Structure formats: structure tokens, C-alpha cells
Amino acid sequence: MQIGIVGLPNVGKSTLFNAITQAGAEAANYPFCTIDPNVGVVEVPDERLDKLTELVKPKKTVPTAIEFVDIAGLVKGASKGEGLGNKFLSNIREVDAIAHVVRCFESGDITHVDGSIGPVRDIETINLELVLSDLEQVERRMEKTKKMLKTGEREYKDEYALLEKLYQVLSEGKSARALDFTPEEERILKAFPLLSTKPILYVANVSEEDLTSGGENKLVQEVKEYAEAEGSEVVMVCAKIEAEIAELDKEDKEEFLQDLGLSEAGLDKLIRGGYSLLGLITYFTAGEQEVRAWTIVQGTKAPQAAGKIHTDFEKGFIRAEVVSYEDLVKSGSYAQAREKGLVRLEGKDYVMNDGDVTHFRFNV
Image (cartoon, rainbow, N blue to C red; front, side, top):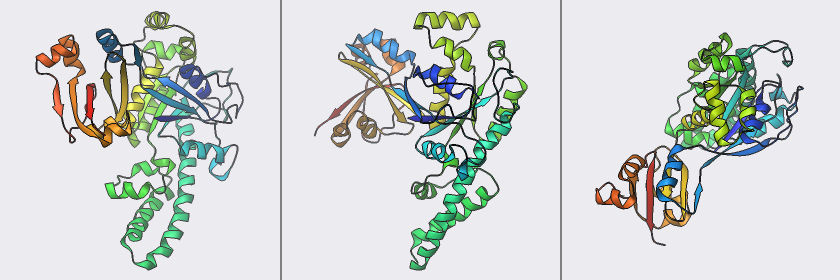
């Protein structure tokens, strides 16, 4: 899974990226500090994986991971090539979801590209550039598809009908996310993926005082109201605190969070938000050689989940031996879970659940 971190210049985007990936991307108080997208792979924290490791005592433990992509900040006119607009838009086209960092704190030491703090204005600036870019793409596609209508083929009629629907919404300055697509429309959209259909998670970057107080300032409330209206989520983090956490080992990190009165780091909230945004779940494989976490989309059937491990597992799938994480931990071992009848044999139509501990049987 790839999440693109976007935002206007100087909102704390690169500082947050550095903190959560420890990738060392340059962060400075001037626009376009980030030019090429920095990519950082982050292990997904999961207490269940730690518990399974204690239980099974494997030779190694492999967590699942998320890729964060720090994409260049943009300004008004990006869709027309202003600033690094074209580069920004091509980079964002490649990610699965967007984490849009918005500044929700005042500071005389950090300049804002528009001269004042206005998170909703910032959100609308970026969203409008995505919409304008999509509108241009839809207009070009409509010209091409209109010519193909002469063939009388149904597929071109369906595509043109969808393009007209998209054109109307985008022309009003609204994101394509505002539309509910049918499965058939979603299939057509895969041929010309749009920027404004990508799921967005708004990351409200607040001050240390705001984060530790447990409340929400007025700016965060404005972001939440905006997000609720379009069906998006908001995560509140402090990039400055995340930068400090990044320098600590696991034990010191937990103590630091406790001292601040926080239950979890911003990274954990961001990852959980990303999983929810994309409808992702985790299943596990557990044996003497390795305990490992695997990320799949909710609704994935057993053969396709097996294919995440190796294509041969999917091709030659016979059955899956499945026990829930909770049942395995309560039983104390795989053998005891089997004795209690908690290990199930599932076939090709089995839909995987979050926390399934699975052993796949296959034959190629």
C-alpha cells in the first residue's frame, strides 16, 4: 500500500514524513524543499504479531509494511503547471490513497505560503487542483469517446454516460468522490483513473499543547466539519512530537508517550486511518521458521490471500487451515486449538477475516 503525503508548502509535511519513516528527507522553511518524491517504508505496528511471536517462538518475525511517499508541495495553478504542479500531479496519480497534511497551529517562526493560517482554504486549494486536472482529462476522454460512439458499441455508450456524469460534478468544482459509482462504472474508471477519486485522510498538524490537552482547537474543528461533509476521516498529530519520538527506542518511546499523556503515537493513528480508508485487514502465518503479517483488502477470499504469499499458492490452492488470533492465544498453542476443534478447514469461497492465523494447503 502506498500513501502519498501531500500539502501546501510549510505545513509540516516533510517533517512528519521524516519522523514516521526516519528517511532523512530534507525539511526547511521555504517552498519546494521537496522536489523528487521521497519514499519511506514503515513497519505496521501490531501487538498481535508480538503476541504470536511469544507463543510460537519462530526464527524470525516479519511485520507488514506501508509505503509513505512525500510528494512536493504545490501552489494554486498546479493543474496548469504552476510551481511543480505537473510533477506533483503525476506523483500523486501513482499512490493508493492521500494523506493531506493541513496546518492547524499558529507560529511566527514558520511562514505560510498564503501569509495566514486557514486549513479549509488550504484543503480547497489542493482539492481544486485535483479537480481541475481531472476535468481536463475527462474533457479529452469525452472527445475521443464521442468519436467512437459512431460504432454503436455499448461499451462506448456506457463510458460516455459516465464521462458526462463526471463532467457535471467536476465542472461544479466538486471532487469525483462525491459520486456513488456502480461496479460497472468503477470498472470503466480503471481505464482513466482520476485524482479526485482517491480516498483522502486529512492529517491535522497541531501544536504540542493542543495534542496533549486532549481537546481540539477551532482550526481542527473546521477540518473535521469539512471532512465529515465529504465522507473523509481526520487524524490529529503533532509533527514536532513525532520527530522527537523517532529518535527514541521502543521502551523510551512508550515512557515518553506516557509522560505526555498520550495512548499512542501519531504514526499508529495514521496507519490505522490508512487501513480504514482503503478497507484493509491483516492475516497471519505462524510457524517455527517465521511468524508474518500480511495485508489484504477486506472481502478477499482464501485463494487470493494465499496468492499474496506466492502465485503458486493461489494456482494450486486446496484448502486453508484457519484459527482466529483470539482462539489461538486463548488456547496457548496451535496443537491445543486443534484439540478444541477451533482450527477450521476452509475452501475456495472462504472470505478471510482480520486476525485469521492461516496455513495454506496447495499442490502445483
